[in-house]
Amino acid sequence: MAAVDSSTLIAYLLGKAGTGVEQFDAALATGNIRIPPPVLVEVLCHPNLPRHHVDMVNALPLLEILPGFWHRAAETRRKLLTLELRAFIGDTLIAQFCIDHNEPLIANDTDFRHFAKHCGLKLA
Image 1 (tube, helix red, strand yellow):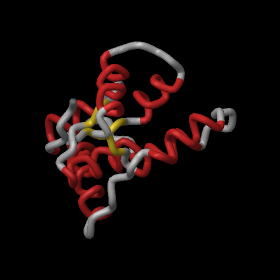
Image 2 (tube, rainbow, N blue to C red):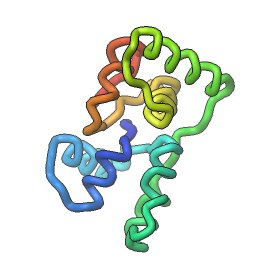
Image 3 (tube, rainbow, N blue to C red):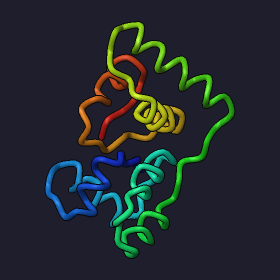
């Protein structure tokens, strides 16, 4: 199983190529993909997203929120901010879902490297 970030999912929907897109496509083909809820929001908020893309994203299984999630996410972000590293709230929430479920994240966004180095996020 793996999770996907919005940057990779959007690239896939736009028909772009790249390692992340290929990893996502392979995981999708085998049914081994789940998405963190913030990714669902980031992707579905695009006003011109074609209906078939909306349907495809809505069909992907979501990672569930686990008890204590918000406190762990705050601690994760605090840890990175204390190190003076970039930790956007959306990225923090996505990373925390993956950390909680021990799911590797397929991401084109290099900001996740800080979560991998300092917080236990696995990158695919």
